[in-house]
Every structure is written in structure tokens, then in C-alpha cells.
Length: 221
Image 1 (cartoon, rainbow, N blue to C red):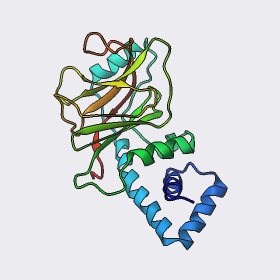
Image 2 (image 1 turned 90 degrees about the vertical axis):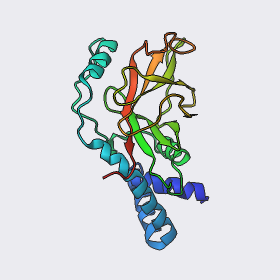
Image 3 (image 1 turned 30 degrees about the vertical axis):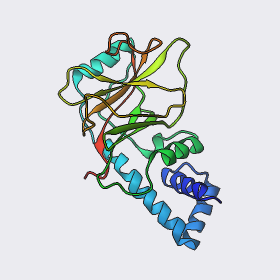
């Protein structure tokens, strides 16, 4: 097993995406291999901050009114952000690959800001990390859009009246950008909207919100 495969196995074990037989094998490996057990511990500490997103938080009423309007009134009522591990009803390899490619192995000097962008039905779609002034996006479950449309990434700092475009999301679902004019901060909303080719012609979102989340400091209590 290569180092990358070991790391992905540790991530999948922590996420709970392994089949029962694979999970048993991973536990046996932890008992026999202190190095692998340490990797599992690292992933537990690294992913634990995402559980803080479960803290109920009332989103701005105007924001959800906009989401409901863009979806034709079909958006479900939100009672706050939540991110239970069982929500990862995704392919284990897709999740592990996205996380392994996205999260650094060495703890940063300053905790990064993180969020998971959710669909209107609270399904996790993208992982976002902001560190050293840069925002990185990775699809947990890559998906396409209808022909003639593109996905555009936006940031809305707290207190701002309109979001700032961070660019178009490529088909790979992986994206890295250094925002101009906005600085990543706790509480900042990150959203992806559906736009015409080339992105919004107005500099503001014109299509429906597909995915949305709020940045929070990793490791914050």
C-alpha cells in the first residue's frame, strides 16, 4: 500500500465510508501499525472542525428569500447549518480523493477557514478552505451543469450588500483563487450560482444558488 493509499484509507475510516469488512481491516491495521493509527488520529483532528458547522445559526432572512425565489419556491425551510457525517452518502473514493488533495498534512501556523457548500437539500457538494489569503474549492461529488450554463463562485463578507465573484468553477470541480477586494474571514458566505456562458454579465449573481456555506475557523471552539 502506497503512502497516499494509506492516507486515503485513514480518511475514509474517519468519514465512515468504508464497508464493514474494510472498516474491520482498518481497525486491525491500527492495532498493529502505530503509524497508521497516528494517521487516523490526524484525520480525526483535521475533520473535527467541520462538525462545528452543525451549530444552529439563523441565516439572513433576505438570503433564504432569494434562494426560495430563484428555485421557484421549492427550497426547503432551513433551520440552520448542519453537517452530520452520515450526510456523506457519496462514493468513498471521491470523498477521500477530494479531501486528501485539499487538506494539508502539516498543521498550519494559523488555522484555516473552512466550510462545506451544501445543496438546497443539505447534501454536501464542495469543500472550501481559505488560508493565507487564498480560497480553494474541491468537489466532493463532481457534477456537471446543463449545456450552455456554467457555475460561478461568489463570496459575501458579513455586512456586505452584494457578493464578489471569485471566478468560474471548472468542470473538474477543483479551483484555487486569491480574491481581489475581499479577504476571507469567519462568517463569510461562499456560494455557487448557475450562470450563462462566461459568467454573470452584470457582476452580480443572475441565476439560482446551487450550493452555499459559511466559513468558520478550523479548530474554533
